[in-house]
Image 1: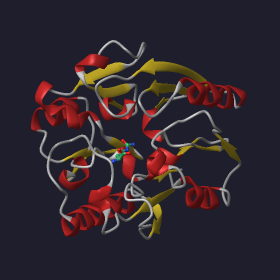
Image 2: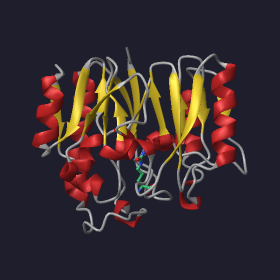
Image 3: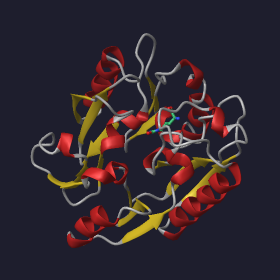
Image 4: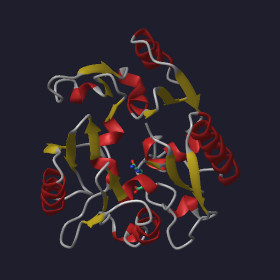
Length: 250
Ligand code: CIR
C-alpha cells in the first residue's frame, strides 16, 4: 500500500517543455485544473501529498516520475536523459532523503524514471532515447544489490517504456500491441490500436486511474474486474506526459 506521493504543479512556462506530440500548445489554466483533479484522486485513494510549487527553471518539472525510482529499500535518484531536465532531481532527493536511503545514477549513465516498469519484484528497464546502457546497468546493479530482479527491454517509437506499458496489479499489464509478448508470466490487456495513450494507467492502492476518453480499452480493463476513475489528461498529453509521470508514490 502507498501512503504518500510527491507531486509538482505545472509552471506557467509548462508549454516550453519538450514534446513530440504534435497536439498543439497546452492551455495552462486547464493543465492546472487537470493537475488538481489528479491530486484529488490520489488523496481519495488514501495518499498524503507533498505538493511542490512549480520551478520555472524546469518546464517539465511536473513530471516527477522521471527523477527517482522508489522501492521499499531505497530511492534511486536518476540522472535524466535530456540535459534540460538535469537538476530537477535535487529537490526530490532532499524530500526522499527524509524517508529512505538514497542511491544515485551517475554520469555517463542516464535514466528517466518513466522507463522503469516495476512488475511485482521485477523491474523492466526500458532502453530509450533517455535511458542509456550505462544508466540501465547502474540501476540493475543497485536493484539486484537490494534483492530485486531487473532486465532491460528496448523502447522504440515512444518516449518511455511506461508510455506503452503499465502494470496494474494482480498480474495484469496494460500495453500497446508491440509489447503483447514482452512480459513473460503476466497477462497483457492490449490497449486498442487507436487508444495507445490508454496504455499509461496508474494503479493506486487497488484502484485504477485511466486517462479519460478511451472507451474500448476501458471496457477491456473493466472486464478484468478493476475499479476505474477517469482523469482528463489532454494538456499533459500534449507534452508527452501521462498519469504515471505526474507522481512519485511510496
Ligand atoms: C519530457 O519529454 O521529458 C516531458 N515533456 C514528458 C515526460 C513524461 N514523463 C514520463 O513519461 N514519465
